[in-house]
Every structure is written in C-alpha cells, then in structure tokens.
Image (cartoon, rainbow, N blue to C red; front, side):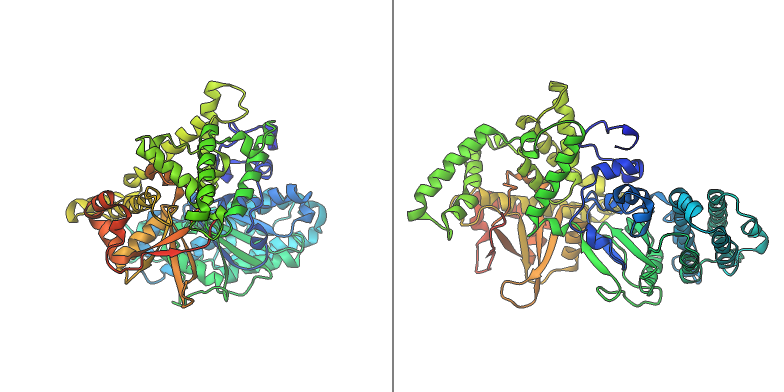
Length: 605
C-alpha cells in the first residue's frame, strides 16, 4: 500500500479523502457498474451511504488512475473529485439568496468557482509534471495568458487582479497555485457579500465577478484541449453527495447537465437518494436517458444480482486479508456455527424424506431451501432460545449487509478487534463473536431513530403528536412482526419473507414515511413489471440488518407480501392495535377478509 503503511484493521473504513492514492488502489475492487461510469456522458449514481460511491469516484482521479494504468500518459480521462460535504458551498447563509432575484446567478458563480478551484488543484498536483515534460512552453503561455486570462476578464474580474496571468511562466505549479488563490479571493468576496445582505433590510449592490459554466469553465476546458495541456482526454467532474447542495444550487447543476458538451467534459453526480429536484433554473426537468444516464447503486445489490454482490464482497475481503498476510478464503475467515449447520442439515433430511407425501414446492430442493432454516429458528423459539440462532458465516454476513459494502466492513472491523482480544494473531473470527457483533449492530439500528430525527422533528412531535420518525419506527417494527409471524408459522407455505408490495391507494403521509425509510436505509426498493403484466409495481425490502431483532432468516426470500395501504397506515400510527392481534392469531391476522395478501415469486438464491 502507498506509504507502505497498512490500516490498523484489515476491515477499517476510512473516507476516501483520508486515504492515499496507493491505499485506494490497493483496497479497491471494481464494482460491476464501474466500467459504465467511466464512459463519456453525464451520469447520476444513486445509493445509500456506505455503498461505495465515494470510493469509486476517488478511484477515477488521476493519481489513482496513473497507478492503475501504469502512467499518467495512459489514463483515459481526467477526474476531478469534488466532495460537496467538505466544501462551504452548502453553508446555511447561502439559503438567503434561494428565492431572491439574482440568486441563481450568484449560486452558479459560487458553484463554478468551486469546481474550477478543484480543477486547478488537480492540475497542479497531478498534471504539472506532464505539462512540464510534454507541453510546449508557448502552448502553456497561450493557455494562461489568453484562455485563462480572458475567461476571468469576461467574467468581471478586474484587469489589475489578473496581471499575474501575464507574467512569464517559470513554474507551472506556482502558476496554478496563484490561480487557486485568486479563485479563493473571489469566493470569499462573494460569500462576504451574501452574509452582509443577511444583516440589513436594504438592498446591497454586488460589484464582484460572476462566473458561469459555459462562459468560464468551458472556455478554460477548450483552452486545455487546444493547447495540449492534458493528453487528448475528456475531463470528468465527480461531484460526491450532491444531496447537500441547496435546491437552487441543484437547479444550477441540473442546468449544466442539460448542456451538450460531453465530448469535452462530463458531470458524474452521486446522491444518497435525497436529491432535491431534477428541474433546471428555467423550470424544465432533465430526464434520463435524454440528458443523463442513471445507475442505482444500491438496488442492483438487493435483487437479481445478489450472487454478484456475494462474489464482489468475497473479492474485497480476500484482497484485504492478503494485504495482511492472512492466507484464508472469506468463508474460512468467517466460519459458520458448525453445530447449528449440523442441526439444519438434519432438518433438511427430514424435509427431503417427507417431500414425496407432503412436498409443497416444484422440487425437493425448493422445500429444503424455503423451510429448513426457518424451521430451525421456529424450534429454537419454541424452546425460548431464539437468541441462540447464530448469525455467523460469511454468506450470512453478506446477506445481512443488504447490498451496502460498509454494512459488512464496519461490523467485520469490530469482529476483528474483538477477536484480537482473544488471540493477537487473528486467523479467523469465532462464530460467537460474529453473532454478538451482528446482534449489537441490529440493536443500534433499531434504536437509532432518535438520532436521525432533527430538533425540529422532536419539537413538532411534542406539539402535534407523532413525528415522521416515530411513524417510521412504528412501521419498521410492524413489518418486522409480520415477517416474524410467517417464519414462526409452520403451516405457512412461504415463511422466508422480507419484502412487500402495496395494494390500494396510498396517502401522501404513507409515501413520505416510506421515502424516509428509503433515505435512511431501513427500506430498499425495486421497480419491476407487475405479475399480471399490466404496468409496474414497487417492491419494498426491509433491511436484513434487522434480521436478528425479529428472528428472521436473512438468507434470501421466497415471496413478497402484498399489504393493503390502510394496514401500513395503521402500523404507522397505532401499531399495537395490530401487532397484538398478530401475536395471538399469528399469520391468520393477516388473512382476514378477501384481500389478496401474498404474491409468490421465484426463489432468490
């Protein structure tokens, strides 16, 4: 690894900004979507926090690509990583101009300055050597004396503040550093103006520069290409966590997406499923695939590509183990509870022997897959020892992570630390430690609702009753109880459930709560063709990280529950009225009346 320094723990998770290029390349495993994201064109990549978006964007930067490809000359694009969270572009004072005349102009100028600052920082750090060795000095002078000078002059920068751009260029790094300093000064000037406006009711004139994407950024990019400042490659602006932009800034960014310049530059935008709008400044909505393409980074890991995710995580784990000199497969390093697997095998044999007379599936193996592990959990529950079910073994840990890499790595790091307390040289993680950590993580998640609520949420709850966070917590607990009732009912044809579709009309309140669950990772969704072939339907998946809290089997599913919208509404607002009936009647409580509550799907193995 770069700097020849291993991380403290093979499964430790650090933000990509805090890793060196060598460390990122050493740890990185190519995501299935990575090759798609490397092609020209504007793209959105949507996924929950921890799904690996930032790592992928950071891997697209020139320092990482130079290591990966062998040299700077071999990179296919010049990636400029812009982590929105770490900039001051989303400071609260910028909300002051959201609804004011000229706010969009100031917002575009601030956003333009931000990406230009990152562009020149990357040119300074990663391209200076290439420019010094491969670009004629006359071309470098033309680029700075003409394209850069006039781009800023026409944006309103005073000529006397641009005199440094006309000087003889002796050091390209210093030249870029001076440009960055100038951009910082313009940014500071604009921010001070906005802050002053917040302190007076009177209008305040703005006399500073106003930078725009087309007339500033694209002119500079044209200059880069015309003067061979970089190899003949496009520039990718990699905007990470764009949810953190204000609504007006988001509209500015969408306006840029609507422009046609992808042969020279592309915008790669990551979101955490809370992107504020897809409207442009003019009110026109950008659309896929006309203006951009979209990669749903999380959804692709919860459905039909589950096995691909297993292989993907296996490669990540074994690459990290190899770096630490641990010669074990992922399965060997995270072994299952041996006694539990023996008992489940016995149940499998019983099911096989009964199949000819009592089989329910199309094949004997279908029944084994659907019923063996749920039956084992049921028997443990009868003995009042459901907590003894062991959530251990690599495959089971992968399934519990529900398609989010960090939700595997964070618990794995805790397991490694716990195992080190037992034996310093760790060669595998004891199943009891695996199970304990997974249960602790599930408990934290189920009790974390207070932490995701805002002070405003809690204030409203005190004044008006349940907050949205309370309703989400009620809904999640109610869904868990429904799925638990199925796994404990030996007469149910489908016992391994963790997902549902919705029948009936949904209130706006229900839609809002479901969306809140998606944003915070308690729910996932897939959009697919309906079973009757008419239109599309949404399937919601409860995160398998909560499996230990409801004694669920996280190893796949064999059906979707069709739940009425009014039942979900009841669970949100008064769950005890329903879950008490569910506990006494079991799944019979779900089958009152003529509502079609269950839809069978193919086995998800």
